[in-house]
Amino acid sequence: MPKAAPRRDPHWKAFASRRRDPETKREAVLKTAAQLFLEKSYGRTSLNDVAERLNITKPALYHYFRNKEQILLECYRLGCGLIEEILNDIAAHCGTGLEKVEAFIYSYANVMTINFGRCVMRLDDGDLSSEALAEVRNYKRKIDGRLRSFIREGIDDGSITRCDPKIAAFSIAGAVNWICKWYEPEGPLSAEEIATQFARTLTQGLENRNRAATVRERLPDQTTEFPRRGTGVVK
Amino acid sequence: MPKAAPRRDPHWKAFASRRRDPETKREAVLKTAAQLFLEKSYGRTSLNDVAERLNITKPALYHYFRNKEQILLECYRLGCGLIEEILNDIAAHCGTGLEKVEAFIYSYANVMTINFGRCVMRLDDGDLSSEALAEVRNYKRKIDGRLRSFIREGIDDGSITRCDPKIAAFSIAGAVNWICKWYEPEGPLSAEEIATQFARTLTQGLENRNRAATVRERLPDQTTEFPRRGTGVVK
Image 1 (cartoon, rainbow over the protein chains, first blue to last red):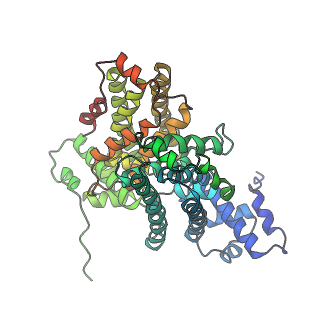
Image 2 (image 1 turned 135 degrees about the vertical axis):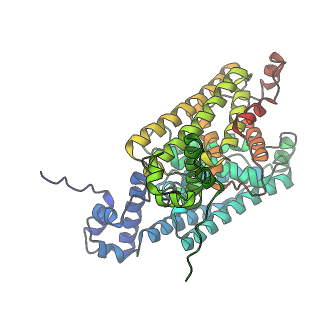
Image 3 (image 1 turned 90 degrees about the vertical axis):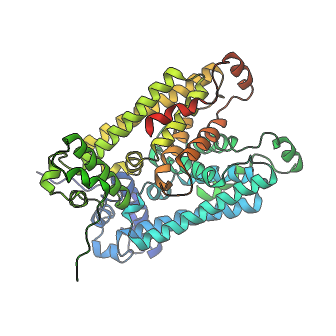
């Protein structure tokens, strides 16, 4: 029986020419691995699968990453780097605490629709070694801390109703992280539609309805268009 | 070096007496496996681990389940059975669409704080065989369909603002399912606190504020206490 030709994705082309720089090749490994983690799960993907899809040998792959977990950690680093840039942008440019939370949801939802975001959030942390787990928990703790600080800021400036910032942050993070489980890039819902509706419905539950009008009057230059700021970063 | 005594959980006692009925023993296997899936992840747990924790042999374990996936599927069936009972109860007893959604969130959040709920929702579906995946997707589709129908009912009866029921349902399911990733039974937040705040904040984003007052007047017997109905079922 003739053997079926191995499936390849466009990233293998990075290895088809000797002239490509190592950075491009490294990125191709990451993109291909992320795609495989999504197709087969992290646990079921082997370095052999990655090498085969890229049409390179396993030793060639070891030149870029020493094991599967290093690839996954690099995906985490990239995704968290993106989110941190967004968070700094929001902290510097948005108005009330509520507007910051809204901007965060919008931008974070966009990150959850790209492969790096999707493949890392799908993972059961129990599949990680203890060193990797420590690094990943550190990223998560940082992002969670920033979101909680936006919520506390909103409670202080009167834009957000009294609530437990910890539960509120987990509720928002959960809704947004879960996108990785159901979002289909070729599906009927666009990332834009999802991010917009999430930013709207998830913040209305936090809004301090009694004081909302007063706060908006105090900040005439800030509009609800702020959430769209993050888009450029993640596309 | 002396070997450390294997760790046991209280469920091994079900196998310590010959008089226990098979149903009790089967349940002990499930509870122990769920505990291990939470401690080590599904992928890293072996049937040997389960047998060792229960202080029984692997062949004795095969008497109850033929492989690890069968145990996981049984956890799914139990969890989904609980949720279905809750959904029927809500459909029969709650008032407006919005109240039904609120009751659903409250009860479902409670299921996500028990081990069966936590261990199945943590899983990357890619770790399942295609038959198991089909069964699991069927459960998820059913629950998602019921939640969407409550949302549509709310849009029709005027209690829920116009929105895409699919995105709204995914947003709610995500927030609630994510509880499995961060909830700690011994932690500072009780299941009751989490379920109550989730039910409140996640529904306020859906509420049709213009018509909320009118709808409440139309249904004088229905109160916001409905969400508490589900508690008895999941404890």
